[in-house]
Structures are given as structure tokens and as C-alpha cells.
Image 1 (cartoon, rainbow, N blue to C red):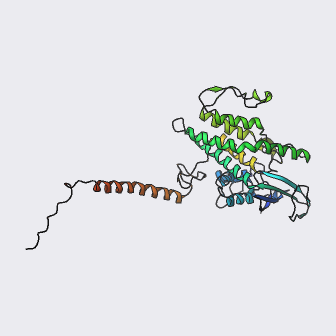
Image 2: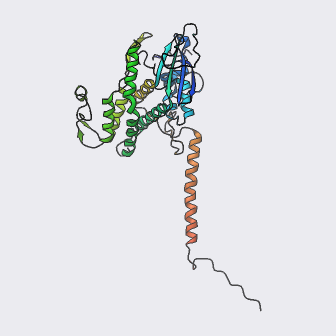
Image 3: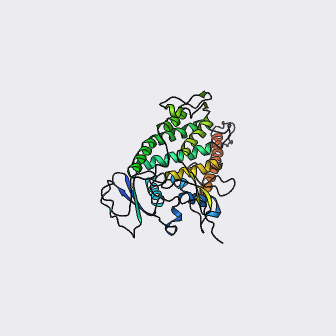
Length: 365
């Protein structure tokens, strides 16, 4: 069977990625920029990995790999986060270098062996572990918010929506500084402009929604918003479910996509060079695809797992068969134990008249 051609342009930070852990909680990430189709490593393509996990026509032979948005959200340890970076590259890099030769000390990076490999382009970046942890928490909160918003008004949890929005608001606090830093770096290196936008006004908008979940309409023209941008935020009712949707839209709209013409067809893709500083734009492109498609990222029903997972069949509630069995066993023994405890309590509270009568022994003559 002929393999289907993906209608999406590659979303790869680099091939042959290597990671070196530095003592100051930073990762030095280096890879090879693909210059031809033969150098593309499909397993490192963030968006194609997502498609292959959900749609069979994009899957390689064998067991499908987990989608990167789930892998990253479930990476609750530093070891798991480092493994993600080894697979896909940095999420939010700093001091990015893209060169065919030794970059010297121009990027503030030294002590590493840079080799020029037949004119191929080497790319490297520093990834801060603290930033990586915060980005994981932010994306996980966005996915959990997306799942919560699938419920109707009777089942939706307002405290859960408030908590998810609060986690997102804390996570995007540094986005304006990161956006400005990348914008200045690109300008100084005569590269295309930054492919995403998230300034203080966008941050204030999410913070406003976090603190103003109510049933009343509010004019969003305060909190440091400029005259140029306040008109874009009209009268909005910040009812909890609506506030959640507005937060997801703000996250998704921060990362622009564009229509390009590739392989005799128009395709939607991230702008060229959008992933130079990391794969965060690709992760939020996946969130956009989930949101517009009415899909979700369900959480495992096993309360001792709570991992995000990909639904493979209708009615699936657990990420693995093992989680399903463990949960059902605990539920059974909790119910069985409750019955046994009630029986024991009833037996201990029986009065003396209800106990079995015994015939006293006669004393010997």
C-alpha cells in the first residue's frame, strides 16, 4: 500500500538531537537542521506525530507513537522532560545559534565541540529547566480546561475552570518577555520576524479573566490596556465556561499559522523558521487542531494515575488496561470492605439479649 503524503509541512526543530545537562539547571540542546527530505526524521515531527496517533492514514507501520502534546503534559519529572527535549528539541530556547561552523563565543556558549558536517547547518539552544517545568504545567492546564469545557452546564466544575485558568495565567507571565527577546534577536540577525505574538496586553487579558469570572458583562478596557488594543476587546460576559473558551482562544491565537502552497495543494502551516526557538508553536498548533475539531485530551479515570491519553475506542475511560483493572479492584474492595465493616459494627453493638445464650456449667460436688 502506498503511504499517504502528509498535507502538512514539516514541524521539526532539528534531526539527530543531543542534550547535555548543565549544572545550573540548563540543557544545551544541539541538532542538525534538515536541508532535504531524506534528512527529515518523521518521529521528531511534532504535528505529524499528533496526526499519526489519531489518524491511521498518517501512521507508520507498527505501534503508533504517543502524541507530543500528551507526552509533554505527562512529563511530571525532570527525567521525563529531558527525554522529551531529546526527542523533539527545546520548547522555549534561549541563546539560539544556527551556523555551519564553530559559532565561537558570539552566543555566550563555549566548551562544546562544534563540527562542520559537509556544509550542513547546526542549530543549538539553551533550555532552562525551570521554564520547561512551567511550560509543561501551562499546556497541561490548557488541555485539562479543554476537557472540562466539554461538559454541559450541569456537570461543569467552576472551581476546576478557575484553577486551570489560574495555572495558565501564571504560566504565561513570562511570555511577553520571551516574545520581546526573540523579536530583538531575530532583528539583530536579519532573520524573518517573530512568528508569534504575546505582549503584556494579551497577558493582562488572561489575568482579567482569571479574576473576573462572573455572570455580569464587563468592559475590558482597564488594567494597562492601550488605546490601540482596547477596542479589540468589546463587552464580554465572563461566565465561567465562556471565560475558559476565551482563554483557550488567547493561547491559540498567539501562534500564527499561514496558508502555503506545497505539493500541488494549499496547506495550513507554521511560518518558516517558527520553531527556531523551540517547538512550543507546534504544541499549540495541536491544541488549536483539538479545539476546532471538537476533540479533547481526556484524563485517565484512575485517580492514582490522572495521565492524559489518546482515545482509541468509544467509551474509553482509562489510559491502559492495567489502570482499568487497578481502579476496578480498588473500587470492589472499597465496597466489600464497607460491607464487612458494617457487619462487624452491627455485631459489636448487639445487646446481651440478642447474643446466643449459654448454659452455665455446674460446679462439681
